[in-house]
Image (spheres, rainbow, N blue to C red):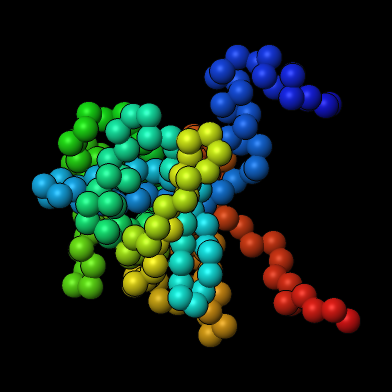
Amino acid sequence: MRLSLADILAKDGHFRRNFMNTLPGPRTAHLIGTKGHRGNENLGVFNTVVHLQASPPLMGFILRPLTVPRETYHNILANRHYTINTIHPDWLDAAHQSSANYPVGTSEFAATNLKAHYSEGHQAPYVAGSPVKIGLEYVETHQLHGGTSFVIGRVIEVILENEQAISESGHLNHELLETMTVAGLDRYYLPQKEQQKEYARVK
């Protein structure tokens, strides 16, 4: 089966959205936690979080066009801090529900009964029970094609629910942590390690 660009564009918007979102395969699913300048807590689901570099540790995520209010981004600019939280299957329903289009100013924590957790070293709310909690400080935003943005943050702390999930080599065992992944906007998966290869070098 071959789909040309014309074939894809000829499909209705619902099909095209689902097809293009699931095309890259499962990606990490995260909840990004922020706090507004008036103290309101906000939470949003993102599947575009990526590692940029390790020294200093930087991570980024894709933000959709600012054609409507994006509380996550506005809060990041206001307070310069945010959190990235992996999703656990025990509270997947609540995590997914946080992606609903709630009115501006509504706390997704309260709306979904997810609990906020704060650490002494960070100003933004974490999601209690998240297997991997990452605290970041905003660095910069890059404008991309089509009005999307790439937001970059510096990692200032990491909180792991299970310290056994990190090996001496630094690898995280996401199978043990039960880190959820997602394909598109609504199909969630659990990771399963098939193989581990040695670092590739020219022989």
